Amino acid sequence: MAVTENQGAGGAAAAADGGVRRARLGLALLGVLLIAVNLRVGFVSVGPLLGSISTDLQLTSSQAGLLTGLPLIAFALFSPLAPPLARGVGLDRALWLSLLLLAAGIVGRSLPVPGAIWAGTAVIGVAIAFLNVLLPSLGKRDFPERVSQVTGIYSSAQSAAAAVGTALVVPIAGTTPDGWRLALGVWAGVALLALAALLPRVLRREPPAPTAAVEGAGRSPWRSLLGWQVTAFMGLQSISFYVFMAWLPSIEHSFGISEAEAGLHTAVFLLVGMAASLVAGALLHRFADQRAVAVGSSVLAAVAFAGLAAFPQVVLVWVVCGAAAGGALIVTALSLFSLRTSSPAQAASLSGMAQSLGYGLAALGPIGFGALYDATGSWTPSLVATAAVMAMLCVLALLVGRNRVIG
Image (cartoon, rainbow, N blue to C red; front, side, top):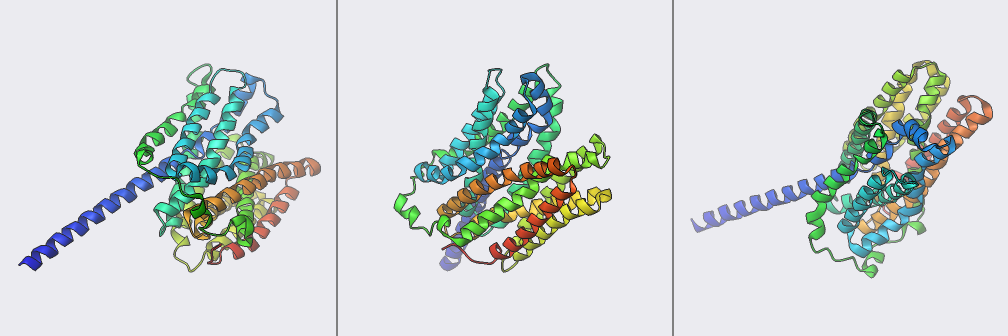
């Protein structure tokens, strides 16, 4: 009888421990998602309002282009600073402070003060740079066995938030005479919600990681060929996404497609990308390595650009191909930060390296794409050149997809 009672007590304790563990994982996933939805919505909400902003602030086309590109410049410059911040104050506190900086930037960008939109946009870029780098490290720490799945989920959450944001900003802006400021500032509420939800984790004692222990966690990715390969993969796959976002409406307009239909295609692009992120996240951990997903997605990206050049009459087919490729590629790239490293600290270091240099490379993609069009007067050379870059991505996919770590 005593044995039975002990076994019953042990079973109840195990069930209680399991329930607590599931609750903690659920809260951890909620935290990841709340951070993720802040990574794009404040960034992409500018595009639909750029005309109103330019008219109100009397911006030239070059200045408007710089305003939209400023966050990417911040990504490239400030991403390497995120790992030292996490080492100094702890990962949870670093994420919380980055969200606080993001909220301040969103509010500041909307103030009717000269230069506020530039300063606020720069602050937003810095904050998102930190969050971009640290989120994969959080995933590796809290979900070491489900990195790819969690990455797929939070990447799709980013896409969903971006789609909602781009759909709502114009109606919000129409509610007041100076409505673009409200339409940009309202997204501070999303950051504040994340800050409130993550505050209990920040208030826990989380001593900063000793520098020696962090350095001893593994070789620096800056001194690793694999680290440079992952960085190149991150940069080249980003080119595909940002070229589509920057130039697809203009390309479609040259094909005789109306603005309304082009807008519908953009919505399709975001929705298909969201679904592809979920599928890729579910598939990545089912294979012995990541080559199948990485190479398949890279081939699809090359096909999308080549198809636009050769058969523009079926543009929606290539939009779907590009969206599916982009959604799967970003999940693969972000997953590699954890899958190719041996510790959360090393994952943060690789994430900082790859996103700094990768976004710098990605920023050059749309610029080069447009410059080649200006030089030739046709989209075909630009599309063919980008397809060739995607072919290079296929080779990189074979290298980074192998199951190995930096060490």
